[in-house]
Image (cartoon, rainbow, N blue to C red; front, side, top):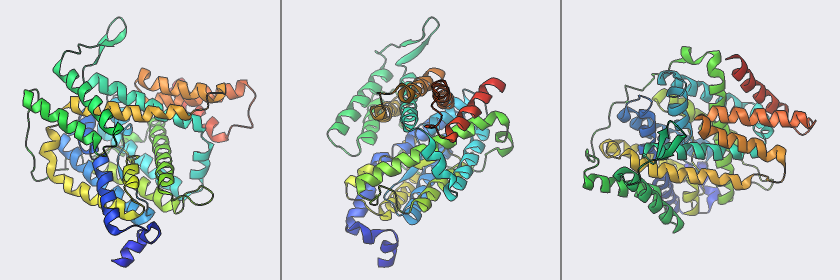
Length: 431
């Protein structure tokens, strides 16, 4: 046992095994909402809820195990918010691709991420992307998720004259969603670790008691994963029209992973004297491998969760924390009826709060220089207004490149930014 703990980085943590286990439980409570929200979002794309629930639990368990064993970081993984919205509402419902094709795109992006994690090109790509665009992408995904949450709860509705307008707030679903959102925000303000899952549960129970939604049960044997397992369509995903989609999936995964790992590791005091992440390559391999395996299982991109910071605050410092999270996700497999009983307006409350957390990245943008903040704002605004994360990223890079070219500021721009801008520009002109 001592050797296992040492391998997981426990010898550097200066914490008791009990503390690491409790930290794992804390992280799990902070992110377990994904077992309900992810199947809910992917089911909108036509995927089987129960099968996706199983795929979500297994992908989260696998990713967390790999991060704990290979990366030795107290960082848990699961299918990411934003990536799942892109999967359902952009690739499938927006662009008209089958969900099997979307799974193929996720698998390809995961394989590319694995290659980037092994080769030095990963550092070149990540370091070349302007930080302000990274912040804009995160905020834009937040706006996009928030818009989806308001739409699903009936708070925002379509309007032939103004495109969108405010829906009837007297409907029970809208009231419960807004009430759940406020509850989650208040509990989070007071430092309650399981605020999101508690808010989802409270709204769901109210809905069951009021007869708005039917309670389907608590525990059962896990549903079959067969409807989504190995259902990816690589042939359909390997087309020119899917290149921007795959690129968008890859970029979001790379940026989300890097940002989460740096933020959580900094909170845990795990950065070295140069401010860099030790044991970075195995950790990235764990993350990228989880995306590929998640696609095989039948879910959208799996990524590191910022909610891992909750476990760090509880004392998590080693890979043991992530391993504990993986074990708890496996235990979740037996609660599928409970997950299926959670209504859309309850998950919308959680989505709206997660959106607020993501939009907070706007504060990190350099608001003193036009070439820095204008592309970031364009990307953030374009994502919800075009209902496309990919188009938001593309317009951000095109704007950035054109402003730099027009200002004759070539030396301050890495070639990668121009390459990415060129790919998206070709997509808009030719496809």
